[in-house]
Image 1 (cartoon, rainbow, N blue to C red):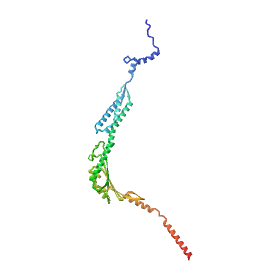
Image 2 (cartoon, rainbow, N blue to C red; image 1 turned 90 degrees about the horizontal axis):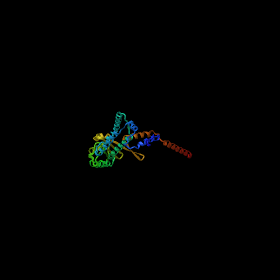
Image 3 (cartoon, rainbow, N blue to C red; image 1 turned 180 degrees about the vertical axis):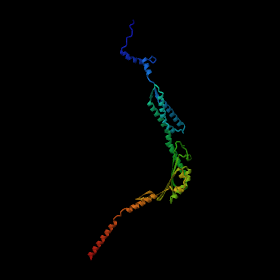
Image 4 (cartoon, rainbow, N blue to C red; image 1 turned 30 degrees about the vertical axis):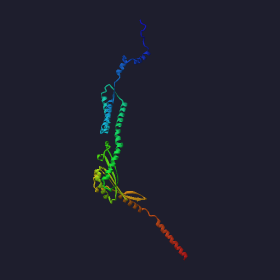
Length: 320
């Protein structure tokens, strides 16, 4: 018999056997116990990857479309972002209905990373739009249009009636041409003019008549709102109109909206009051003065006169 027969393994050798199996090459057969454990391990199905993948594809496509197409409604698409949550919920329900013996796993970290990427991508895409809406190009275009409007007002308004004035143009839209003119303004844009009129006016009707004479030229230039102002001596006249109805009103209709202010001096300073309010204020102040008690200066003067007369009588009696 050969002396190289195998001897039974001791417990220490049995413990080291799994480590030896781990060092086996990939092609070597696995022990039956490891194959059985692998068969009993449940399948794992990840939920959320499909929806988030579709969301990333759509987000990238929308951003690319906004860069190629200037009129692409990126803000409208951004309002549809909550639909990603709806799609994710549908995927969860569908996975639960078809999971069978599989185990569902929600990879929250991947979902959060994808959400951050979507938000960052949308923010980077909207940044150029915000810069265009609030950037220097818009301000430059508005200031240039205001200067152009003031030059045309100086040409079309009657001579000698306007003492001073300034304009304000607001482009209330996302897209505009840097070289646009007043003729390119649209209904959503706002054009406002402030005019200071020269001369003196007898009443509200005279001031409203002067304002009505300028309305045709203002409508032709596309003005939406006008603030008329005039100050002469202690009188101040104001009229603020806007909208198509007031811009086409007659002088009689405008006279009702004219505000007449009066300068009121008190203690070396003055304030502007509405004429009716000032009349009521002066009447109230007069009533207050009448109700206050009069000072006792008259009684003091009478007492001094009586004392003088008494002293004069005493002196006459001594001389007599």
